[in-house]
Amino acid sequence: MDSIEKLITMAEDELTQYSTEARKIEKLRPKVGLTVPYPQQKAVREQLLADIPKNIFAKIVERDRQMVALPFWGIGGLGLLLGVSMQQPLDFMATGIGFYLAFGIQSWGWKLEAKRLVVKTLDAIEQDMQNGV
Image (cartoon, rainbow, N blue to C red; front, side, top):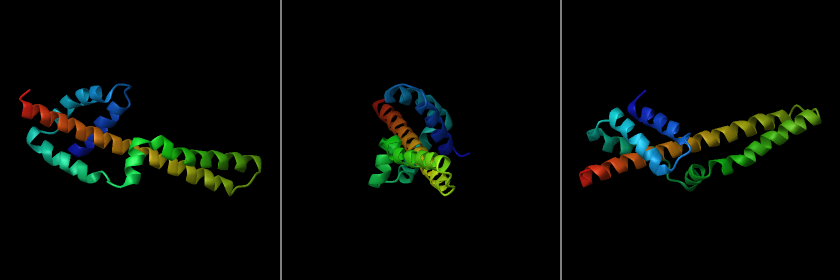
């Protein structure tokens, strides 16, 4: 696993904690410092920014992944309900497709948010280095 994947995994772990974004950044800073040496941090930041899509759909999914996935959870649940109650096996396809899409959208949004947290952490480290803290 390369250093960028390690950083994203560490950021995902921080996202599971209920705290403010500033607290998450502060908890992530020492981990980033140990994982990526300071001279390489700028290159890692640029690579992460290049990996984050810039389109409007990606921004919406990053900000509101649960809202975007909600209709697909509904489609999956409705397909399951209709498939069981009316004994129609084709409705189970809607269940599988809906659940797959909903889970995929939420996973993608989670990764995007973790990448954004790593970028913000690298920016905070750079800011402190420039201020001499």
